[in-house]
Amino acid sequence: MAALRAGLQALGGLESFLQKGDQVLIKVNAGFATPPNLGATTNPELLAELIKQCLAVGAQRVVITDNPINDPQSCFTLSGIGQAVQSAGGVLVPPLERYFRPTTVEGARLIRDWPVLYGPFEGVNKVIGLCPVKDHHRSGASMTMKNWYGLLGGRRNIFHQDIHTIIAELAMLVRPTLVILDGVVSMISNGPTGGSPDDLKATGTLIISTDQVAADALGATLLDKTPADLPFIGQAAALGLGSADWRSLKPAQVSL
Amino acid sequence: MPTTQAPISRAQTLSGAAILLVLVAVALGILYKQAHYDPLSWGRPTPPPGAAGPAGGPLDLAGLQVPGLTPLGPPENFNAQTLSDKINGKAELYLSAGFKALATRRYHLPGDPQAWFEAFVFDQGQDQGAFSAFSTQRRNQGRALDLGAVAHLSGTSLFILRGPYYVEVIDSGDAPALTEAMQAWAKAWLALTPASAPQAGQSELDLFPPEGLERASLSLLAANVFGCDKLDQVYAGSYQLNGQEATGFISRRADAAQAQALASAYAEFLLGAGGREEPGQDLPQGGRLFGIMGTYELVFSQGTYLAGVHGAEDRQTALDLGQRIFERLPGGQP
Image 1: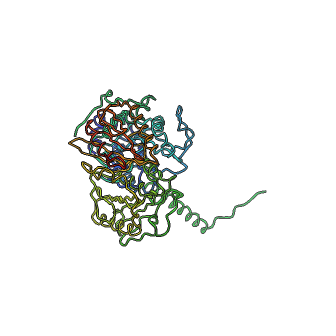
Image 2 (image 1 turned 180 degrees about the vertical axis):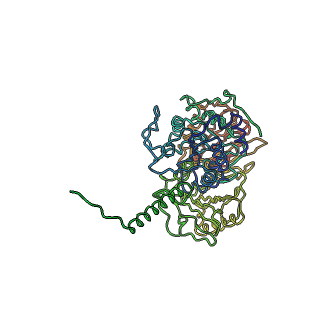
Image 3 (image 1 turned 90 degrees about the vertical axis):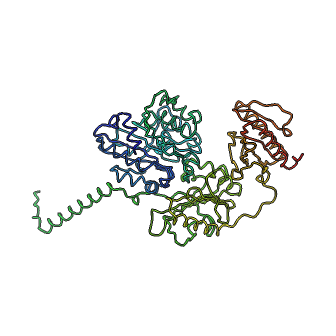
């Protein structure tokens, strides 16, 4: 929690990104019905702190949503996310069927007339992605851009056949206000589900960025990978969605 | 035609007021419920598809009774088409190793819904498939458990290999009572699941030279082995030889021609990835040695076996280990 506060402060405070009266949506990773200590889902304590900070700077409403892999009730409950949202004063919006709309992303090859979770975005004018750094058996890593996968509906597992392209297209779909990549503890093996604390490593880094490509490029290093090991980073950079050369952005660094 | 309205009686007024009060109460109730998180109000309209296993069998988690445990919900069952609905991007790991079905169920300690665990029973079709799923996810820090089956504890999670089944038991937190309950569940499940009969013939695992082998590292890599999409069903084990690291690998193919063709395909893959072939008189018969990205790769075939060394830190380690593997293969004795 101190890392979140210090990181945002280094960027001028959350008020540099949010204004009073904003309606904020936080897209979490609630993909699995697993306990928080396995690191497969967004850290509920970090989420609660972020919600409180959004409300403290005057956000009118903070919506939290995801379309999990497992059934939403189990995921939000067992991951601790549901309780975190309630205790911090956020509004949890479940992925009800009526909230999905067929969507085509201009220039995309895969996201064409595909159901996307739109309902929770009604009235929202600021979007924040909040997710953990994880190894991923199929894509190599699950970070901020992969986090948007939870906005897709339908039989989305067919996209696993072209996982890097779908991740890059998801970055085309969502242009976030901020992404917060939680690498305080990273899942370095057996992702994306993990299953044992032995799959986790204390990597001691929280990344806050307006550039989701750069955030993922830096996050890759926590998994002992380079952006070149993760083709979706290069694809997203080539589409002009951000910079794979995170060092060139001269990020502010805060040590605690 | 003019109409007249009958005067409203006191009873009608009171009835109308009562109805309005009920409507206001309902509206307030809806607002209250919407403002508070209630997990029980959600849920997918249809359960995930997938048939439960035969009654009394290893996949029949509805029929598995464990004293002292309370189910947290009904069992879930998944097939090859729906596996990713449960484990998303990790599905491919199981599918490539012969996955047939998955049964899962959550349990909690009586009177404490916060102390829960979930059991995953993967039916991989054959013993080799289950070994692949088990061995490729084995945690280095795991410690063996005496449950009458291959099992280890990693953190507080339990991993079991039994015949064609691979089992994970994942808990919600570190509590001794929960760990005991998980092991009780495992024993009950193992009692339903007989061990496989020993298989005829020599397993690839027996062919790895024992000197320098880290036995816990032995694994079956099902697909895309060492980054080569043509290489599959390869047993691999890590070695420490003279302070140098290397990985030995062995794979039995359908016939000698296939083993030879696969060795050639892997050699071509290495060359395509920037490898440099190293000539030498001291290679195993038909072997080819490559230097690539600061390490050495050796590949050869012997009869129906494809074998070699991956990621050796130096040339001599690759040659020594390769020769030892070659000599243990049927027909490879000097």
